[in-house]
Amino acid sequence: MTSREGVRTALVDLSGTLHIDDMEVPGSVEALKRLRKSGMNIKFVTNTTKESKRVLHDHLLSLGFDIKRDEIFTSLTAARHLLEQRNLQPLVLDGAPLIAIHKARYYKRKDGMALGPGPFVAALEFSTDKMAEVVGKPESRFFLSAVEEFGCHPSQCVMIGDDARDDIGGAQNSGMKGILVKTGKYRGGDEKKIDPPPQHVADDFSAAVDFILSFLL
Image 1 (cartoon, rainbow, N blue to C red):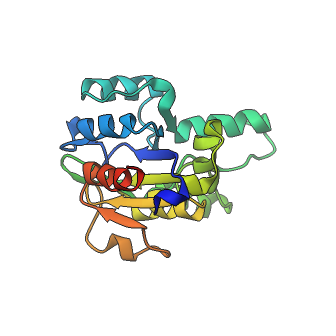
Image 2: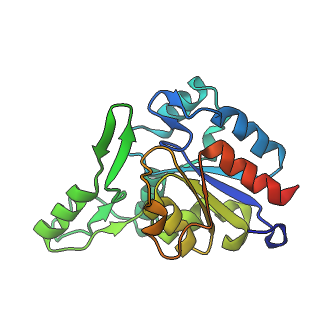
């Protein structure tokens, strides 16, 4: 990643990258302030299905993050957009598409790793004999929709996250750059599990911001 490539937009994962449950990943609040001062567009992207955007926003504010509600783009938002675009309704009698919010395998909590919805989606695919249409990360549609309002090319966007497959792999498959952080669900060697590998691996969000700013200054 070089300054000549004109990075204009940063996509930032939430859980595992900025915070873990009710704990800030150390240095993340101040790092976000530094990133904002650069003038970059910022969007916070998450696969969470347990909280509404309002509840999620209130939680982030309580942790000290300067984040506006309309800067948050969730997989639930992406699902709603899809349903509205296709005018889909639940409980139809003649069958319906199987739509999955996301297929994350696991995520990080304070007490350790927890099972994500991916295994349950796979079970539903098996039982219904249908492949689910996934709307959250790592689908390209999710990443491209998140930055649509900024009018920038995917090559001008960088994704920062703790999930090599869903955050970084998904973003890079969408034409974006990817920075993997060694917090949250990260485990040693995760960067070797995707092809191409992350463009950069940082110790945490603060280090990722320093890396980005080193190319902008």
